[in-house]
Amino acid sequence: MSGEIQQRFHARSIQDPDGFWREQSTLVHWETPFDQVLDYSRPPFARWFVGGKTNLCYNAVDRHLAARGDQNAVVYISSETGVEKHYTFRQLHAEVNRFAAVLKRLGVGQGDRVIIYMPMIAEALFAMLACTRIGAIHSVVFGGFAAHSLATRIDDARPLVMITADAGMRSGKSVRYKPLVDEACRLAQFPPQHVLIVDRGIDPEMSRMPGRDVDYAELREAVGEATVPVTWLESNAPSYILYTSGTTGKPKGVQRDTGGYAVALAASMHHIFCGKPGEAMFTTSDIGWVVGHSYIVYAPLIHGMTTIMYEGLPTRPDAGIWWKIVAQQGVTVMFSSPTAIRVLKKQDPKYLSQHNLQSLRTLFLAGEPLDEPTARWISDGLAVPVVDNYWQTETGWPILSAMPGVEDTPRKYGSPSFPVYGYNVALLDENTGQEVGADQKGVLAIVPPLPPGCLSTIWGDDARFVSTYFSLLKERKVYSSFDWGIRDQDGYYFILGRTDDVINVAGHRLGTREIEEAISGHANIAEVAVVGVEDKVKGQVPVAFAVVRNASSLQDDAALAALEKEVMETVDQRLGGIARPARVHFVTLLPKTRSGKLLRRSIQALAEGRDPGDLTTLDDASALEQIRAALVSRR
Ligand code: ATP
Ligand code: MG
Image (cartoon, rainbow, N blue to C red; front, top):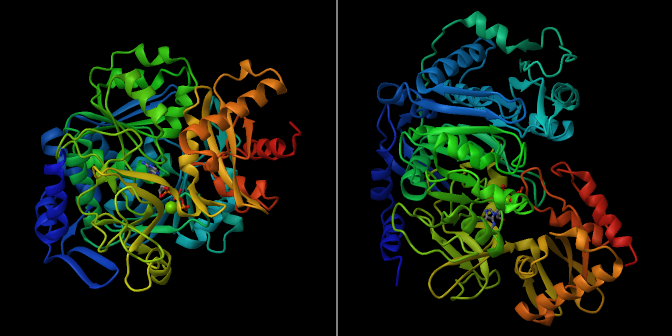
């Protein structure tokens, strides 16, 4: 059986966490060595590398000055403004120092919170690193969240300073940020003392509130070529707060430590992502998400790689823009999401073959289930292996993944392969608390302690941390991922969906993900959402909302009815009649969170005639309108 090396590596990390993580800890700089690898005296709170002092910014920037000062650290490309800027590690160091000096001038010090509400501009990355340099705790809020969502996060984090820009750009149009910031500050109970504005010159009408609002360019000039010494932090000092996507409910403020996170990211670059120092990594996420924190900002820089920071859509000026960047920058490691690939899949496949992609070794995808047709399409189109990896905002780095740096195991479509070292993964029966056998569904749980890099708590709410994540079983504390999983005979894991996405049809428990996967097998379906809808007879029935690939072929109701029938038959063949959707509705857009995840809870609420609930994370309101319209249409 393949995977033995990887299995031994994993087993050692669980059986001898002290020895294993002590070895990995040497990948980062410790100003003061730690006294203890793990303190687990207060379960489920794990404290890694106790007593050790380090700094994320130092590891990402200063440490590379000697060996790679003139190497590009950041390549910033905006297809919205046409700006392309390169920053060497030396230049990055200078910018981060100046930013840190500006923050200090505004009174920011160790432990203070700073909210970063910014578009994808290089200053956002400088701001994050400047915060961690001086021990301030950043909380990046995805630019584009509405004022109300921003206000909730302000009141939770209570920042001293908020950093923003005049505007973002999306699809060639400016998106004003400042009015939103003003409104959020008005709504908030604990607004920041200062709003620091990076003025891109996009919104000439931007208003400023005297005394509160300060201009970054002015202060940057004023501090000159300042340098700010690194604040050495005990390994468990918080580095940042980041809210989860809010797919299932109210977002949770994930708190991350310093030393454990640095080690976890550095190790992941060796064992999972396999980038080499000096090479370029391109992660297409946004700094507002965990993937952006870990794999646009911290991990590639800690590893001495060039990170590509991209502002723009994957389809503008055309659907080949990402591949052009890969070719021009010699990207070796790329990280994106299934949602983004599905967007490209609706475009002409010719865009995949217009550029020389020889440098690219692997494409990593995470964030949502990766269906087989999408995985095949992109893997064949680019002629590179695709590595599906599964994790959460909470964990900060992959829980399940292939680990090509440990062993090059064959991959199975639809599976994020194996538990990653450090994670003691168990699939548990929620009723008995027992581990399920091969090919049986269970809740994906992690037997604590959680490895380095995972959340230390929920910001300001230890009790919520314990009650939210560790109450799956009564008799012992295990971390629940709230996802269903299954492990096959060969040890490969498959994610079946979220625990609240399981539907009960006449006593049969079905994962909506399985039904979606089956429907995706139909050649004319680009994307689909399945929800369980209350039914008097069966308890619940599956209802599907599908986006068709080739809409022009569906001119009339008869054609739609025929496609609906075909989709139902596809499900019958693959899963059996019990899983057959009661209805298949056709839409052109599905409601998603701003991080690109399906908002099934809102679709389900509409389908059951209920209120769609908290919509602050909804990306495009017209998608919900389509669901509403589809539900009342008579076809
Ligand atoms: P909230 O917790 O607020 O409801 P969220 O869970 O959507 O929001 P994230 O932390 O961004 O917020 O998403 C993590 C979730 O995304 C996982 O729990 C899982 O459901 C899904 N996910 C991530 N990667 C994969 C993957 N490779 N395959 C399947 N599902 C994935
Ligand atoms: Mg979650």
